[in-house]
Image (cartoon, rainbow, N blue to C red; front, side, top):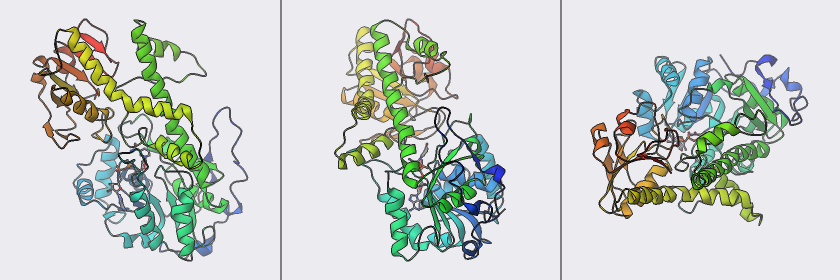
Amino acid sequence: MSITAAVPPATVTTVTPVGTPPVAAAPVLPRQREEPDRRLAAQVHHDLADVALVGLGYVGLPTALAFHAAGSTVIGLDASAARRSSIADGSVDLLPSDHRRLAEALQDPARFTVSADPGRLQDAGAVIVAVPTPVDDHLQPDLSILRAACRTVVEHAVAGQVIILTSTTYVGSTEDLLVRPLRERGLEVGTDLHVAFSPERIDPGNDRHAHEDVPRVVGGVTEACTYEAMRVLGTYAAKLHPVSSPAAAEMTKLFENTFRAVNIALANEVADITRSLHLDVLEIVEAAATKPYGFMPFYPGPGVGGHCIPCDPHYLLWQLKSLRQHPPVISSAMTAIAARPAQVVERVQQVLSAAGRGMRGSSVTVVGVTYKPDVEDVRESPALEIIDGLRRYGVEVGYHDPLVPVLTCHDGTVLHSQPASRAAEVDLVLLHTAHDCLEPAWVERPSLLLDATYRLPAGPTRWTV
Ligand SMILES: NC(=O)c1ccc[n+]([C@@H]2O[C@H](COP(=O)([O-])OP(=O)(O)OC[C@H]3O[C@@H](n4cnc5c(N)ncnc54)[C@H](O)[C@@H]3O)[C@@H](O)[C@H]2O)c1
């Protein structure tokens, strides 16, 4: 199926959050809804590919597979040879449903190709950018990867293309990294080609919400850009929500993840408060969650990881600095989040001490080292910082994770996942990430267990952070 085909209005469903006024729902889509710009469409080699994905990571690959499953012809570009080969041999970290899609796509080379050649971008009707946007050691946005990817996209852009930026980034990125450079190349957005920002909301490892069912927010540079981007994304996404500009879409994503960061920081704080008051935090959260309005449950834990919650609010904080604006709630939430792994280390010390042991020479196994359950991703995982902190105290630290056979610590030390037999031998087991596939021995056998997930029932040898 070609994305240049007119989209039936039914597939472009706008959704409006409860309690907010409709956001420009009707007027945002111009007359082109019925009559797309045939002049532009004719200038692209649509017979070669409907869509090209730049970056086939946790976001880009499932998106590429969703397009392929919806009938599109897809080119996936990834700069990493290791990533391309793990896609080709099917060993890449994906949900089972996406693994099935990958197997089907790999059997269909006419409609699914993976390449490192940016020249292939010229073959695509639409280009979607999904490259990482991390922070550096000083928590400043590291835009080098995004800038390089956008430079490549601009360099290879052809008239008639629809370019959609999906990486989480600061407000104004679409304008700075795409619109202006395209104009400098002589391509006017809105007339020669179309550009929009549409943040990705995928939740790797979580198959409760099908990728297709998660609404996509879309903000085009012009109304025609919004329409064209919705037409592309509507190939697989069932619900689309237009906003007035790329900047509005960029800010929407930053707000979503900042909202989560602030609430996770609050949940951690409530866990500390309930411990002081000898109450069970889960009981409190679950009781509060019975309120049918005005409350959303968030759960405490050992900290946050991945490339979203620990990073995205820093894009906002960094941008606000240049406006001399200080948002105290977000700043303190991020400070508290950054301090959480150190608090876990302190708690290990307290629990060992209550059992008559010191840190130096004690053995601790950290169980589950990924930043969340059922994924192999250890980026920004609090486990890494906790392991570092424990080692600094002279603790003999090991780890167990069925999804991470080998772990490289921050100082370069390489550790190997310990077998379940170790559970009964170590002084303390720290449950950090509760994967579905964890062997019960890890929670049944330890003489001391510190639960940083707050999910286990209490017991005489079980403590919570
Ligand atoms: N992972 C998530 O849960 C999630 C969820 C929503 C949004 N996001 C956002 O989506 C974006 C992508 O995140 P991700 O987790 O998929 O990153 P990732 O690190 O998993 O994947 C990015 C891929 O892009 C490739 N790449 C980098 N530069 C490239 C280039 N110039 N050309 C081609 N390929 C290139 C890398 O090799 C890598 O395989 C980020 O902005 C992130 O914040 C991530």
